[in-house]
Length: 273
Image (cartoon, rainbow, N blue to C red; front, top):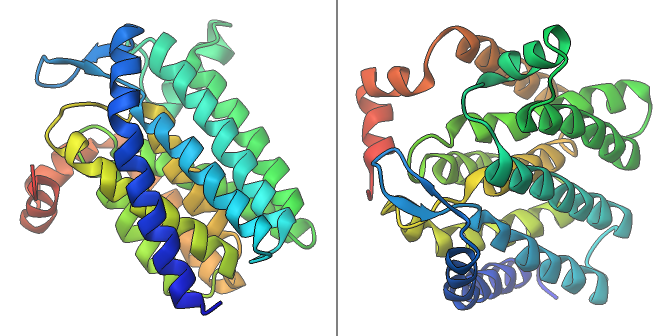
């Protein structure tokens, strides 16, 4: 089957599946009391990004059934989605927002011997990134490099998820740039699938009718990281430097304040809200 036709079918299929499932998930989360106060003070469902898990699972099943790629890569991708999705959902439902930032969570663990859900997510995310890297990499240098990229990409999208639609826009832009790069074909298809699902969900996020939560941002981030791990060596070095620089910057300065001070970034951030 022509690759462009496959991309179109994966995109449309994921978009339609998400549109059909969203009302069911919203009702389920409301009924279960999975709600939180957002930055506007409204009580809305949180963790709706969980919807990406069944949609991506369906996409992976299709790639396996129609022999569209490397099964080891497909299962590594699904491992990342399930693992970080569950860790994110735990943080959404049980997390304490009094501690923020990767540095803050690690301080709580190392100095006070207290494990926060954010600290667990960081440690688990590191181990999971290493496991996935070992499945899809060749040689120890690749494993080391890919582990960092997957872990940092996961946290990068999480850093963006402070205002409606911001994390989704960051994912779509990053995914588009990766799609144009030399990433493995199977990851191109799965990113296209996740893009379709993200666009179907986006109106709910932009209008602050629900929060995709850490479960959603984690899935978006680790998907980008795994896809990026199949890029060329020098491309990955550039991406790693950018991710490290951004994380160092956000430990000292507020990303939201930086966006507010920049006209172009502020315009993109406010777009479609």
